[in-house]
Image (cartoon, rainbow, N blue to C red):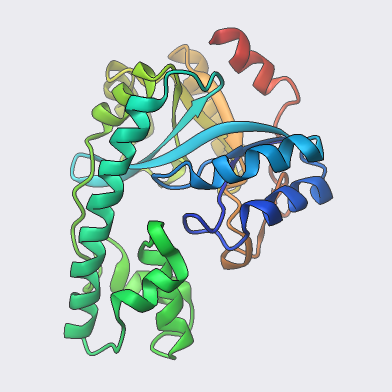
Length: 275
């Protein structure tokens, strides 16, 4: 079984790299992509563990980028890991920008009356602290009923507690991934604001060369739409559950939501052939 989209607790998942590998073995996932947000730390820690467990680990990352002023996530896959040093250096710059945003986010939440500090969030998220960690604290302290309410009311882009983070433009993210020899895939396209059919020429002009057609958020109609768009624009196809562990209990590694994720067994081989 293949799953090319998963997260560890080095970004916003709840499983350690070791626990994620254990979960992959339990779920029957033998090809796993770790795509933590703006970091390779989870992948780096899991590499030897995966080899020992017989899991084929794919080097990946998920970048937060801006497109028309809105956040769009971009997956990078590096089937050959050589030549990644300049890209890793650039990712360190993204991490610095993330922490600067977190300082302002903590201050903004305190302005709104929440007793939440940056130190509390960083105790959960460590080097890759993000909005989900602030949301977890809000739930734990009883300020909101659940993570969804935390985002809807305070942390989403249109919510009252949102603070802007300096993010690379979508085209820059694609360029950085492609220059590092990677596959640049648009993550969960169903979440992208706007009409995908209208956006596709612009996205492809930026150098995008893959589309995540298979995802836990996609029903059969969405999957078919994105497969058709990938074929129309000669894009590669990627897919994964977007597994986060306990923060998204309905999403299972390898099978998605209610077993709606059915990734073809030859998908990774096609990616290798294309690269």
